[in-house]
Amino acid sequence: MPPPVKKTMRHLKKTVFGFFFLFLSLFLTDLCFAYTIVSPVSSKPIIIQARRPLSTMVLKLSSKDELASLRVATAQNRAGEDQVIDPMGLYEKDGLSYIHYSLPLKKGDNTFVINPGEQELKIEYIPVRTLLNINFEDSNAFLFHRTAVIPEECGLCHTEQLPEGHGLDVERLKKNADYSPACFSCHRNLHSKGEWLHGPAANIYCMSCHKKGVDDTKITLLTGRVDDVCFQCHINKIKFRTQEHVHGPVGTGDCTICHDPHGDAYQFQLWAEGTTALCIGCHGNKKNIGKKSIGFYPHGIVLGSGCVACHSPHASGNRFQLYKPINELCISCHINLADVEKGHPVGNHPLKNKIDPRRKDRELACTSCHNPHGSNYRFLLIGDILGGHVCNKCHNN
Ligand code: HEC
Ligand code: HEC
Ligand code: HEC
Ligand code: HEC
Ligand code: HEC
Ligand code: HEC
Ligand code: HEC
Ligand code: HEC
Ligand code: HEC
Ligand code: HEC
Image (cartoon, rainbow, N blue to C red; front, side):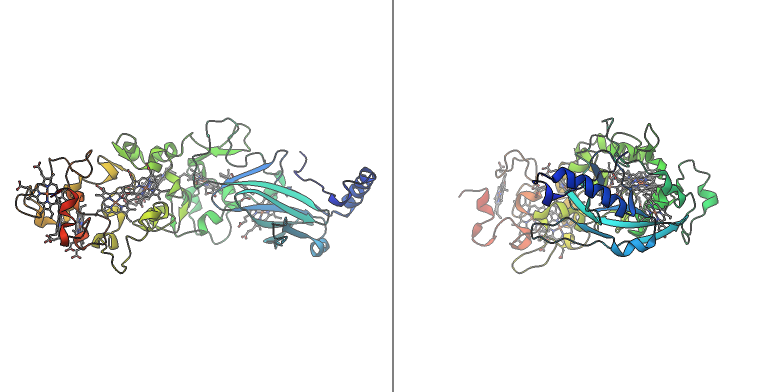
């Protein structure tokens, strides 16, 4: 399979002697190239779909002396600058040197230039925090090792042997058919990333979720939808599908938009602290409600237990995925109003079973007058109680 390289000779393109020089230079540079790109190898443009904006490139040198003249850089950006990439490691086997580079990727097209020879490597990077744009059913949709087959010579060093200091009970792990140490030998960084590891990934049971493709070299997921993968073990969570109110990303089966299936920095393998920071990571308009600021009355509980004091991150039987219907939810903490059907805030004022005059499709509830997320007015009210600015929202006179 030819490598995805384009030998560019921009300065010669327009000359009549272009072809002549091209052949001559190809001949000469082939002699000069003492390196080969071992990986990635692909006849098609390389597509990488991953969380981490990084890819590994491995070059083989016949002589270590060549290292001094080797230069890998990103192609020039608009400002005309390029970024030189230092090798990550140099490993030797049978007199050959394998140099590993970790290429930083940006979303979309990336071009790297390897010198001498000005070989170009093009990689399209699709971040997969959102898996929504991947059609797993597509027979070509091998998410992983997609067009690139892992070259056999990688196996010279990347064996079933776990790296030193892994601290795992290999004898026990081996009993599970999904145990896949070879994967781990290249993908070790899935573990160092965070302290909250997901059980099966921590045990290197990669094949409990991944599977090899028809031709044994491509790697994909066990099932079509990511949540199907999760439900295989977390069977009690299938109920998310049938609950009446399902959180947006859970509804689309996108468990991994919040949980890294391997592990992440926060509890439950989340990429941000799960009670509030995670939520405002997507619900940006709520980002200030968990902070004290001048002229703003936060709801004490948002500062404490956070969003998940009231909302399920997954699904529930109530609108907005609330754990309980609104009034029940509020009085579960504000117990002084527990048995009050009427009589708050004044006289015989009803608290439910009436249409809310402000939002005619909704019933009167605590949130008709209070904002559960905090307010610029005392008691989290929807207006200033002084001057009748609360009452006149519904009572015109
Ligand atoms: C010889 C090293 C090596 C081995 C062994 C290996 N991989 Fe990979 N894998 C890579 C490289 C290189 C990439 C490309 C992304 C990168 O550069 O990090 C990759 C990419 C992936 C990706 C996704 C990223 C993408 O490109 O879409 C998955 C998933 C994956 N590998 C899973 C596995 C599993 C599961 C196994 C074991 C069956 C395995 N790999 C074995 C080197 C390896
Ligand atoms: C000469 C031995 C050797 C060969 C051949 C080799 N590797 Fe490696 N590779 C290593 C060593 C050693 C490490 C790092 C181990 C360590 O740091 O503990 C490594 C690390 C890696 C990593 C992990 C990098 C990271 O981010 O930590 C990847 C991915 C990888 N190799 C891919 C490949 C691929 C793909 C090939 C084949 C094209 C290959 N290697 C060929 C020896 C080799
Ligand atoms: C619990 C299921 C599960 C297990 C176990 C698992 N994976 Fe994954 N992996 C996934 C899913 C799902 C994706 C798809 C991308 C996403 O949603 O994060 C993925 C993506 C990847 C990726 C590329 C994307 C990324 O996150 O960088 C690599 C590489 C990978 N897996 C390797 C491995 C290796 C190696 C193991 C074993 C140590 C393993 N996986 C174990 C479910 C799993
Ligand atoms: C192969 C079986 C398996 C698959 C598939 C699987 N899990 Fe798990 N998961 C486990 C095990 C085992 C634990 C550890 C349970 C424990 O410690 O209580 C766990 C724990 C978790 C936890 C932490 C639970 C806690 O209370 O700390 C979360 C979150 C989680 N998994 C999410 C997922 C998601 C999301 C997926 C799909 C991408 C998934 N799991 C797929 C087996 C699996
Ligand atoms: C919007 C982000 C988000 C999405 C999407 C998401 N989760 Fe969670 N998940 C959380 C948070 C936050 C927690 C922490 C528990 C809590 O605070 O209620 C959690 C906890 C968990 C737990 C451990 C605690 C428990 O309830 O047993 C499991 C298992 C789990 N999620 C599985 C899943 C599965 C399966 C999916 C996909 C169907 C999914 N999650 C989708 C945010 C999410
Ligand atoms: C990955 C992004 C993401 C994260 C993280 C996230 N959400 Fe959401 N959330 C969404 C999307 C998408 C919707 C659906 C939006 C829509 O239907 O308008 C949604 C909808 C909601 C709704 C219903 C809104 C409505 O008007 O019906 C609530 C409530 C909600 N999220 C609360 C939370 C809470 C609490 C957390 C943290 C546990 C959280 N979200 C984390 C993306 C996210
Ligand atoms: C005290 C309980 C409580 C807490 C804590 C809470 N919410 Fe809510 N949330 C509600 C209620 C009740 C509603 C319905 C509001 C209504 O009836 O108007 C709601 C509605 C929403 C909605 C949909 C309507 C809107 O205002 O956009 C989103 C999104 C939402 N909450 C996100 C969050 C996020 C993010 C957090 C944490 C930063 C959070 N909530 C904390 C109770 C709460
Ligand atoms: C999980 C417990 C919890 C839930 C649920 C809850 N709250 Fe609160 N609420 C608190 C805490 C804690 C405070 C802060 C008390 C303090 O500072 O003295 C508070 C404060 C308030 C205040 C301000 C009281 C004052 O004297 O300034 C109002 C009003 C209020 N909540 C209304 C509601 C409404 C309406 C709901 C339902 C949407 C609700 N709460 C749900 C715990 C909760
Ligand atoms: C019709 C509007 C309205 C509704 C509906 C309403 N409140 Fe109030 N609430 C008020 C007003 C006005 C105040 C301020 C009272 C004052 O000035 O003494 C208040 C004060 C509060 C306070 C702080 C003072 C105290 O009594 O501790 C809490 C807590 C509270 N409400 C909770 C609730 C809960 C819980 C519900 C739903 C069961 C609810 N409110 C429904 C208008 C309302
Ligand atoms: C969110 C809308 C809303 C707000 C704000 C509101 N009310 Fe009401 N109020 C109602 C509804 C609905 C009724 C019931 C009307 C009916 O029975 O048809 C009602 C009924 C009343 C009643 C008659 C109760 C009885 O004795 O039968 C009084 C008095 C009253 N409100 C005073 C107030 C005062 C004072 C305020 C400001 C502190 C206020 N309301 C704020 C919606 C509201």
